[in-house]
Image: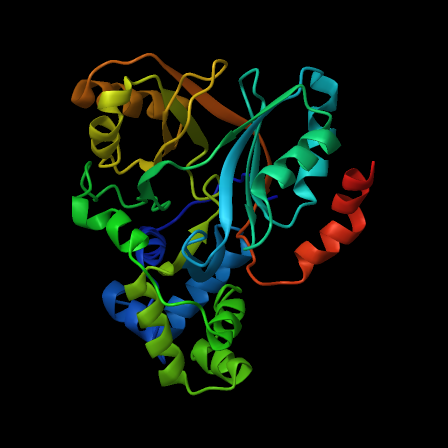
Length: 353
């Protein structure tokens, strides 16, 4: 876990960090393309990214695949652990599952929130039941995505981006749901490579092409095809948002009437500070179908975004859940043997009891 530090960025740093979150060039010399946009040399661009990576501002540069599109199942899970002294211990047990990519402590009776993904053939519900048992949770609710309005953290460090995004900038749900050809063995091999962190070299894709035993141009064409088909959301950088200056993040959940959820969700997704916007199921203990994730520099800035959302869509009962501790934040690794190892070492023990 990265420790939040106070860092200063000049104008080029801010423009660079904002740009690489949107799209990192898939090209023979990607840093040269970035350097031309920023008005610096290729070497200076590479050195800046190397420094920002070393200082834990940039977390990773890689392909960002759509979990569901490539055949995995995933869900958000909320867990209630009544004994506050045991929350960290429970979170550590949950973190051992390789499909758990995000795990946070939040200021709510449901105090552990994590996302988990499982490959084709595995039962998501069974895995959650096992994690519930291992964590000795008091209550667990499964909150899968019923409709995705927006996904993708793109923090604006320049202050020059528009307050609202255009619908074209927001992730295309129709593309996500189109029928896709099944993944081939080559597809899986390429996914395993492009999900890793990009080597910080002038020609980084040469390294990956060699690993894939293919030509660079073939790798580029494959990446373009995967993005067009919706298997890959984008190739981009992910930041340590606190170290980038966005020290507050609020998961705001809204109690919106069922017949208004889609209309309201589409409007909330337009706000640039909203990185994720979903419709999820409700429970007697959780009557909030609409989820928005807001990133801002401070708590008060998050609350200002909530106020602006209300000014646009109307007022609904809501909760603002802030993360008080980050237990895990990483990218899911697809088609790796780690999950088999988890079943052998941990999962099977629970099933046999």
